[in-house]
Length: 85
Image (cartoon, rainbow, N blue to C red; front, side, top):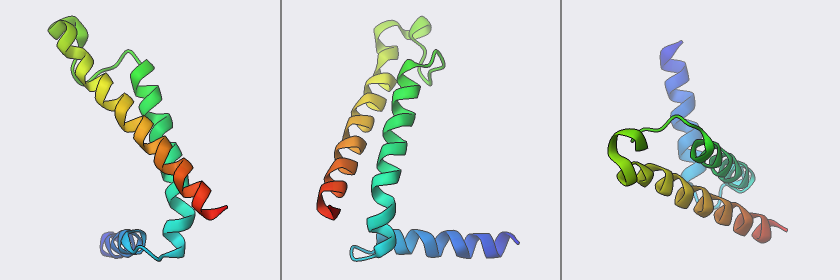
């Protein structure tokens, strides 16, 4: 079962990496919006990888990284949606 799951995951990753794949065209906007939503939730959540209570202003670095990643993912998803439509 582990081997079949690994083969399926590898096939899925290969299909997503092909530039002309229909699966990529369909899933990339969905994945982009999911990443943007999760990054927003992470920024708002009190749980951090680098806590502000311990490191002060340096603790905001992970929140800043999540914010930049979320914005980039949302822009990518909007760009993909424009290209499809």
